[in-house]
Amino acid sequence: MNEYLRCGRFRLALDRPLVMGIVNITPDSFSDGGRFLDPGAAIAHARELIDEGADILDLGAESTRPGAQPVSAAEEIGRLAPVLDALRDAPLPVSVDTMKPEVMRAALDRGAAMINDVGALAAPGALDAVAASGCGVCLMHMQGEPRTMQAAPHYDDVVGEVKAFLAARVEACERAGIERERIVIDPGFGFGKTVEHNFALLRGLPQLAQLGLPLLAGWSRKSSLGKITGREPQQRLAASLAAALLALQRGARILRVHDVRETRDVIAVWQAAEKR
Ligand code: HH2
Image (cartoon, rainbow, N blue to C red; front, side):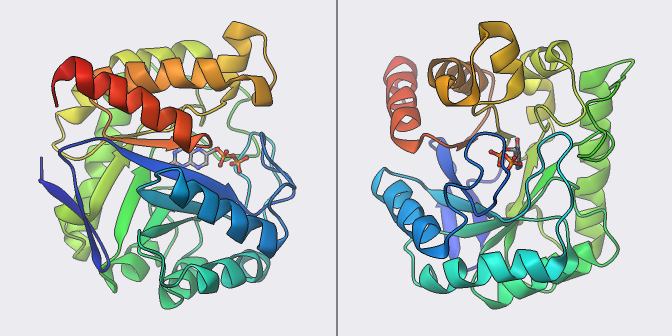
């Protein structure tokens, strides 16, 4: 694996796990919808996550929760723009969680250093939008699309299929001129997956790590954790931290989370145990 991840003007060392803090500028995200739709609230939350020790911020302006309704590119850009402008000189890379090439280009023009695409740059023009800049990119696996993905997810071999998909998308990136040192891969916990699929993928992280790229894990407050604990999204912190630790132990190198400070403590314990 590369020793660092290149995200625009940033180079993030990969010798210790990184925390990606989530800022959802949406009315309908599954765990914090509406809390940060106002730009001032989103900017304040972003600054709080930086103070808590985030290594990357991930701004999302369209919810991808199961059943979410799509948002237009103009609406997404309108939500992102004031927050990106306020974070232009932030001391860390700002990522934008979007599937739309138009939004990617607008975000990169406004200083975003990374694109996080739950569609793995499959939309026409997405590979080119990312290739044209020096930004980092997260390629995530999803079966289906958010509106319907949890209806009846099916795999014969979930780990093998997700691994083959990610390998193919990495190859497509490289063909388009996106260097490996800019790429992160993510199995997409909760995206067209049952509870069993998600835990099979958690156990299978070492196989995905064989692709030789940094692995991102996004378990924070997800519904599989709700199903096994019986808790609502706001009460899933302990379960999220347990999942984060299990993901670290199996090779995840970037944790995408709502609760940055608490996740940093998990990493500190893991590092002490691993002597890293
Ligand atoms: N999960 C969510 C959104 N984006 N991106 C990556 N790479 N990996 C993930 O696991 C992932 C993601 C869903 O979480 P959240 O942003 O909190 O919710 P919503 O999509 O409802 O805004």
